[in-house]
Amino acid sequence: MNQTTGERVTVALRVQDPVSRAGVASQLRTRPEVKVIDWDEPDSPQVVVVVLDVLDDGALRV
Image (tube, rainbow, N blue to C red):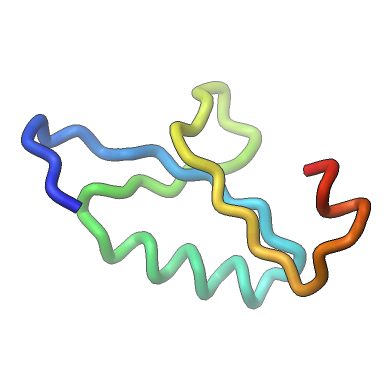
């Protein structure tokens, strides 16, 4: 991902279990162009990453 402006993309995670959340967050944090934010931060994320084990009706409502 090449960004010429130097701005970071804000990413919020929606993950079912803490182990998966930690793994995805640790991978994203290695990227200088990505800033992982908490879901409940006042600023809206530019991207939301959803990690699921099973795609069911409850997951579709996220």
